[in-house]
Length: 260
Image 1 (cartoon, rainbow, N blue to C red):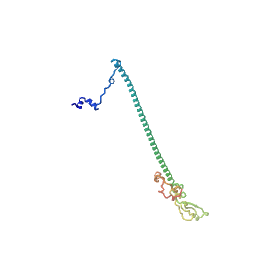
Image 2 (cartoon, rainbow, N blue to C red; image 1 turned 30 degrees about the vertical axis):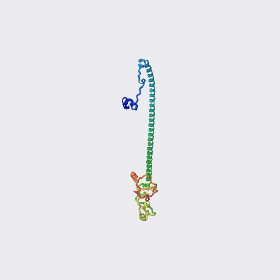
Image 3 (tube, helix red, strand yellow; image 1 turned 120 degrees about the vertical axis):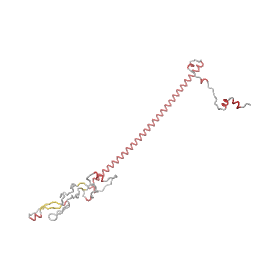
Image 4 (cartoon, rainbow, N blue to C red; image 1 turned 60 degrees about the vertical axis):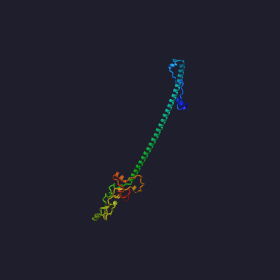
């Protein structure tokens, strides 16, 4: 007896195609696989092949034209996409440059603002120090205008006494003993003018306006001090830079000196 498997063994390709394991081969048309040459179009291989060659070359010309147009369209699309990409990149580059310029301008403005603030603060501090310097100088002792700094009494030249001439209406030995040129205490520097009778009480010989120190305190030294500026500074800075000036702490209180 015959079996189906035995029958299929003699026709495996048909069996596989029936089971869809092998794709079915379809014969292609002879026109598609035919290749024509220029001699076929000229009629060198017969009229029938010439007609087929003319149709082939006509169809090929149309296909080439369509393919060329499609290629041109594709290239135009590529160029368009490239232009859009370049435009987008240039736009992004311009935006980045504009953003960078804006950031640099902002940083420059902030830097200029900080420099201006520092300059104003420095100028303000300089003005405060200059004001404090002027106030300090205005409160320092000044050279006495009476003795011009030597501390001596101008009335007695520092001797403490002066001479006075007493005249008598009668000329006699007693008158000569009691009258004439007599030493008197200088009243200007604290002495006493005893006239003819009495002991000589000499003065100190010092200038009464500055007590012999050669300097007097100005009226500003007796005024109430204003609020101290916000910066710290000591009078020793000005003393070190101004030789000949004396600090108020180094001298006696201004209350002990007359006002100028």
